[in-house]
Each structure stands twice: as structure tokens, then as C-alpha cells.
Image 1 (tube, one colour):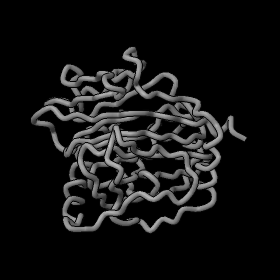
Image 2 (tube, rainbow, N blue to C red):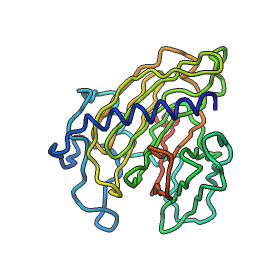
Image 3 (cartoon, helix red, strand yellow):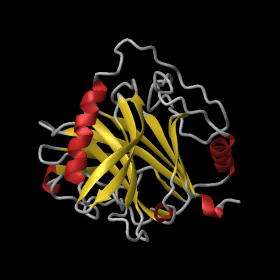
Image 4 (cartoon, rainbow, N blue to C red):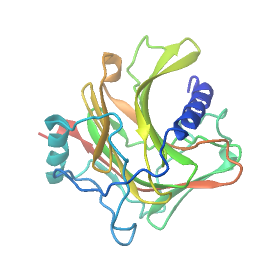
Length: 277
């Protein structure tokens, strides 16, 4: 991926700055669903009944009828793709999008155990892109349940193979750590990238506590939720990035790891909005 090494450095710098802005004693809020969205909810066997979510809505994004209507609609339709990692013979692959500059594949482990996909990053690998051959959609709702150790993070972006004359085919990088989230858009400049910040803000999540990320794409409109809180939304103006896309789910480290750190993905569900009336 073009410029991933530079993007990783910029991401690390941004996150270091972000760490200074998170108040240590900020109160946390319990999740109270505000509408009938089919979001994953913690159970007593997987997480405490009280889930920590962002201390506030940092970007003051108000949920609108469009996105809440989509989330309500998927209540009555099964997902087009679902993986709860009960089968050890997984089709997830980390070599398809491998960037050898950011990860020595010998320093990464991916194993299905205990109904979760556990990815371990070791010294020599701080970014590992996961690919699944069935994850190609145009308009969708995606939900990922995960747990992050203290220095671990999770990214989501997509490859738009039909994009032309853009300099690159990836678009809209969303990432989350336990104490920070951000949405950025790449600007391709020959062999380099610049990153335009769209939205970001502090979080106060307890490491290893289960939470859910939800991403909605409908045409040019994008929405990103954490549990039931809408973090940010964005309207894409470039038609190159409104068509079909190949998903990329990425465990990432905040810094170059000095010891193994794990990220657990406990479920992935995707609804194909083009098949839902």
C-alpha cells in the first residue's frame, strides 16, 4: 500500500499528541440504546454489564433519521456475512494486503480460539491487514466486536478497485484505540500520501473490555459508531470512492512493539444494503 510507512509514522505522532488531551478523571457513561439498532450488546459471559463509551460526543455529531433508519431496518434482515469464529478453519488471510515494510509476517500470529480471532503482533510487526474473500460490498452496514490491549488499536478501510486517475485506491481510514478515535482521508501525491483529518476525539475504554464498532456506507454517505454512539459522519465527494470495495480490517500497535500484544475480534457481521428494500 502506497505510503503506509509514512502514514504509520504520522498516525503514531498524532496519537502521541492526542494522548495529552484525554482528561484522566473524566466521567464515563453507560450505554443506553436510544433506538432499535441491531447492535451487538455485551453479555454476562463476555464482558461486564456496564460498558464504557466515549466521555462525550467529541465532534457533537447528532444522529439523523437516515442512519438510525438503516440500523432499525437491519433488525429484520439477516446479515449477508457473519463470522463468530466458532470454526477453526477460518478464511481470513493476512498475506493478501501484506506490507512487508510495516510487518514481518514471521512476527505475527493469527489463531481462532475460544470463539474469537486472536491476532498477536510481535516486535517487527506493528500493522497487520486482514482480508476475507467474501468481503466485497458497495453499500453496507458492518459491525465488529473486539477487545484491545492497552497499546493495541484497530483500523478499518477499503480498497476501491474501480477507482481511476486517483493515485491510489484506498479511502477513508477509521481507527480506534482505547483512548482515541479518528477518521482520516488520504490525499495521493505521486509516491507519497498526505492525510486529511475528518473527525477525532478522546475515548475512555477499559483495556480488554468488549465493544462494538459499526460502519455504514450508503452511496456517498458514511457513518461510524462506537457501541450506540455516533462518532462521526462524512459525505464523499469523489465518485471514484462510492462504488464496490474490498474490506481491510487491521490490528495495529500504537508504537513499535517491544513485546507481543494481542487484539481479539469476537465477531464480524455485514449487511448488504443493496439487497434490503
